[in-house]
Image (cartoon, rainbow, N blue to C red):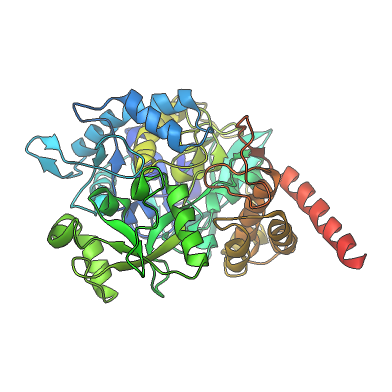
Length: 519
């Protein structure tokens, strides 16, 4: 933060340093770019924790059209078919691009070794070191960014506010670890801030993933889409550890099965059984747990003795928790894992606010619909980062802020987020099964938090937008399951929401609850 912000004037600013952010910055080279990383580069990213890999149609018996068919089926009617086709046709090249940047994927000779995951009709999951794909991607991309002179990396720096002038991005306010605020005049900002797992009590995401990009975009006036669709991974390791350890879907792809305390494969009748769509498998486990059963992932037969060789990271995770996957069934249950909704963007990653792009989990491209197909997320980030960089590079670069004009930091800019008050509210109301009463209570509880002048405001604002979106969708579809509206409507319609709309609806809900209580 010692550098004078005018040195960075009119450079694109990329916020976030996971796969999406790093690839965007690298793809902008040799144009000078500023990369903001809240943590030391490579730390606290969901990418680094990714086990499974990237889905890409690289096998001889596979095609992008087959990949699209599986994506459409999993997405429960809300996948944007045109956007998905474009992304999935580009994923094989994205894998090769990552390999060229130094990512060492697992191979059989010259060919990529391909795994199978739930709801995929073909083996198409490219992975690294068995189950350490994200870690390997981060290793290679961090090294590439460090070696690229045109990328100015600001570590320990967090974006706090987007400055809007005349209806377009004009700058960004960021704060360093020492509390010093800095304004960078820029007409081009890319948000690649990741997901929302830190807003839930039980999640497989880093605790720091609290929807910061969603709050930045909403407060600046951008539209958000499909926020109600929150994916729960079926097989988080059921221990006291938080965040929860993940047992990748790839383990089921290699033959592990779900059983209860009696040894019964209670999901055997589900289409696809253990390899059905994530929303259906997760709800099946949740319902079995609700009926008093325990649920285990049984890998004793398959992968069996080869577990540690195929999944070395998961093997270590399980052994640290006191389990030997080759000899013992693993206690599992669903946990929040991924957010299908996000900042509404077009095919080039542009938001509804000129000068603002989004990429990765924080964006809603239309690929995931109501239920993400396994391993499509890393592939999406790798593909869309390149497209975003191309769009940013061709956009007007001059900020509307006058050169040298001071922009005073607001008190809110200096506050860090505090998700503690939001976690229990969202965990109760926005779990695997929702209903109107619980959602209305959540909205009423989150409203004062979201509009207060305290550190809880940012996370609560994101939680409020999620709750309002879930309340608005009066049907069950994909990962959004309403007990009071168990059927799906005949037409699948994406949701769009602004901050102003959210606050208006929240006020109405709070008022109606007050009247109901006083009656």
